[in-house]
Length: 401
Ligand code: FAD
Ligand code: DHB
Image 1 (cartoon, helix red, strand yellow):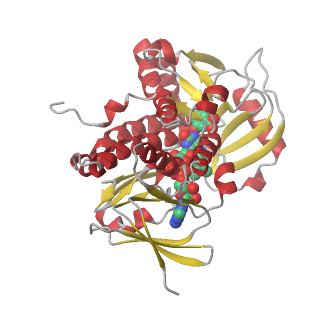
Image 2 (cartoon, rainbow, N blue to C red; image 1 turned 90 degrees about the horizontal axis):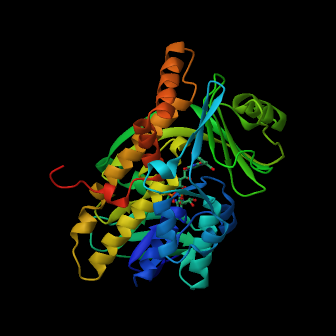
Image 3 (cartoon, rainbow, N blue to C red; image 1 turned 90 degrees about the vertical axis):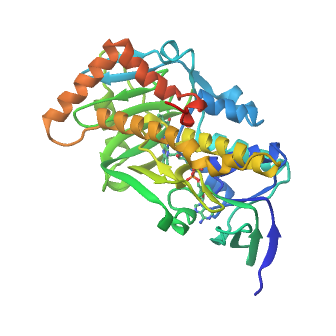
């Protein structure tokens, strides 16, 4: 069967937050793209993941014209809590970080808003595609082959963006040109969505001798909660009663109770740190999780994906509109400084808050660090600045510095 040839300016592989936001930013600037996703629309819209948007991320989405529901339903938070040694301490993020805040708005909702905008505008977004492969990326005419609804296609374009996550096909296609940095952790997160009102108005990151726990939320009726578990544990080892017992134990506080509710969804997420350098080769540009992974403790994964595509959109628009091509050549360098900052922050939060093993020396160091954060404004500010997200300007190296 011969393939049908299609043509666009930018072929985007993956309809996660990175690919969808990029297609939206490009469309707003008059650049055409096609988004190819190998899962169904329903699957992509219901995949529960992150929930914390940095203010800069919320601003990008609003400026792109997809912030209306986020403004209505997102919950602005000005602080988080650190809990350890039986005490809970508030970190006043906004007071410490120039008034900046975070917005609690699920990744599922971000993705739904972006998909709806694209579908309403009648733009090309194909779900359930199969056999995606990238070709001729070292030439001026790269191509993506795929099949869709039992037909084969060849999509000619000027640039391909691999926004296909950690397990996608784009990064492996250029792996021999990349340097990989990575770290695996011997633990994972068991996350649940519960039909329960949040017991704490703001997020609580809890250090406990039995392991880390996190209280988050999605709305006034939905709590999102996480527990550290072993990397090799299976969900069937965690009936709901065991999850609640463990949460109750790890976040217990005198005079405060954790409200329980029906468990609507649960899953185990492995933890890793991973960076590829550079994030591009020829006419293929990697963005989001396809280029880097952070352990979730700093809530950075989704935010990094959006900052990558903000840089990439600017560079692509400039190259298509007769402006400079240096933006594209510099894309990876522009992103990696911010990526490594987020990598360090996520690693730091992870190793400070999780049970690392049986050595009590580790937990004494963690407790010392946590006490320092809640007693030194300088230390708390370091956490706050990174948590709310450094300004996008931090992404590029400043000459001479
Ligand atoms: P993705 O969201 O992974 O999107 C990539 C898309 O590409 C997917 O839709 C995928 O189906 C598609 N795709 C893959 N292969 C192909 C192919 N061959 N062809 C076409 N399409 C393809 N971050 C946090 O900050 N907090 C969290 O609590 C948190 N929880 C997470 C839980 C899980 C299980 C995972 C995997 C990640 C989690 N993250 C979390 C990270 C955060 O969700 C990601 O950083 C974010 O989704 C990155 O967006 P992305 O668009 O780069 O990648
Ligand atoms: C959530 C996820 C995170 O990784 C985090 O650090 C805080 C909150 C969440 O899903 O709500």
